[in-house]
Image (tube, rainbow, N blue to C red; front, side):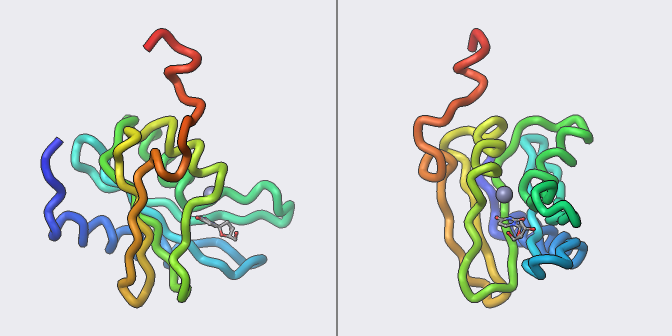
Length: 139
Ligand SMILES: O=c1ccn([C@H]2C[C@H](O)[C@@H](CO)O2)c(=O)[nH]1
Ligand SMILES: [Zn+2]
């Protein structure tokens, strides 16, 4: 995998910001955008989509990953989570599990906010000893 240039990272962050604008979050009013860079170098987006039946809400990160899979992409280089909160937003537990399904343990997960503050974790840091395809398949 090639090194991710600053310019490319800025493009992924811009995509997460664009996705943020599309968030459907009338109940929490907590809007989230996500964008992932696929192994093929494409950028895919997702936003959170809430529901009147609150538990059916799907986070930006999971919608982003599903969007990639629908486009035929199942491998990723990184994912960005964008919010306009003073605190940086980490992925929830459900999203950590879904990220662990498709990303290498060393892949970066980057939180960014409107002040351009940033925090990066690896997938391994977010979900150590994850239950992943290796535990079910002959990999
Ligand atoms: O990393 C996160 C954290 C929360 N949410 C969404 C779920 C819900 O719509 C709202 C508040 O939890 O934010 C995300 O999309 N991603
Ligand atoms: Zn989540």
